[in-house]
Length: 365
Image (cartoon, rainbow, N blue to C red; front, side, top):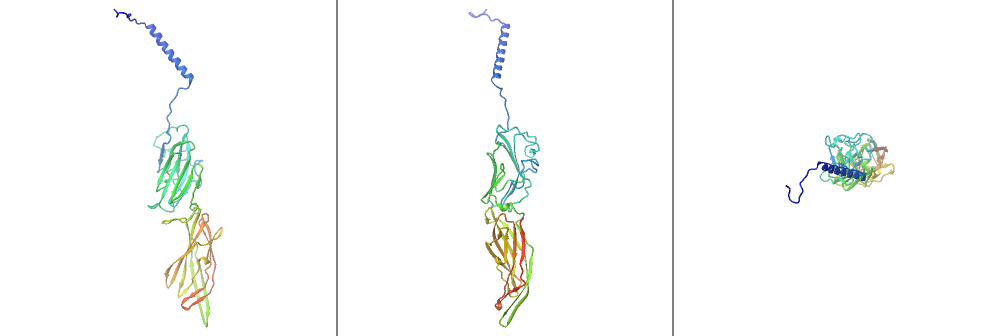
C-alpha cells in the first residue's frame, strides 16, 4: 500500500533518459552561446613588475661582445676623487636575446617567465675591468654616496660605488629611465644610461694619462765679475743643475676640491742652489721661469719656497701654483736664471756672464 493521497512510485527509465538528453542539449547550447559572445579566458604567469636580481661577483661580461647594448669609449665612464667605474652595457628586452650570459646572474636552471604587458627586463652591468683607478682610496672621512635607478627601482650605495662587474637586473616599464648618480665630497656626477649623457663631470679627471710629469735636467755654469774702488771681485764656474716636477690636481686629501669642475691646479716645483762658499744667487722664480699652455703664458697664483742646508750653503726648493683650464695638458717651460750674484761679506754684487735660456716641454697626455 501507499500512503493516503500519494500515488505509488513508478520507475520510468525512458522519461529519465529523455530528461538527461534535454539537459545535455541545454548545456551544449549554453556553451555555444558563450563561445559566440567571446573567447574563453586563459590564465598567464609573468615575472612580476619590480622583480630584481643583483650581483657584485660576476667575472665576465653578461652582454654580447658586440652590439648597441655596449657603451663605447668613455661614454660610460664616471670618475671622482674616490671612485672610478665604467658602464659595460645596458639592455632591455621581453625575451632574452642570444648571446647574453644570464646564467652568471640567475640561479642554475632558472627560467625567466615573460614580463607583464607594458613591462620589460632591463639589465645594467659595470665593466669587470674598467681600465681606470680612483685617485684616492676611500677612508673613514670619505663622503661618497650613490644611486642607480631603473624606473622606480633603486639601488643605493654608501661609502662605495658599484663594483667592477656588478650586475643589476629588474622588470621595469618599457623605456623607463635609467640613471646613475654619484656624490663624492659634495660634488655630484650623473650618467643618463638611456641617453648616454653625463653631467657635473670633474673634467680634469677625464683627460690626461698621468698626474705628475718630470722634465729633463737643465744645467749650465756662469762666471761673475765686478770692480769696486781699486778692488776686483770675481768667481768662476758657478754650476747649476735642476729639473722641474709638474703635478696637476683637482682634489687634495684633508682639504677637498681645490679647483672648479672645469679647471685644475698646476704645481711646478724645482730646486736651486741659492748660496755656497759665501756667495748668494737669489732668483725671482716668477721671472726666471715662464710657464705657458696653448692659450699663452700663465700667471702664477702663488710662489713659495723651502730652504735646507746644503754643505756650507742653502738648497732652495720653489713651488709655483697656477690655475689652469681642465683641458690644458701640454706646457712649455722657459727657464732663464739671471744675475747678479752677491758677496754679502764684501757688500759686492757681481753681474754674470754665460747665462743661458732653457726651453722644455711637459705633457700630461
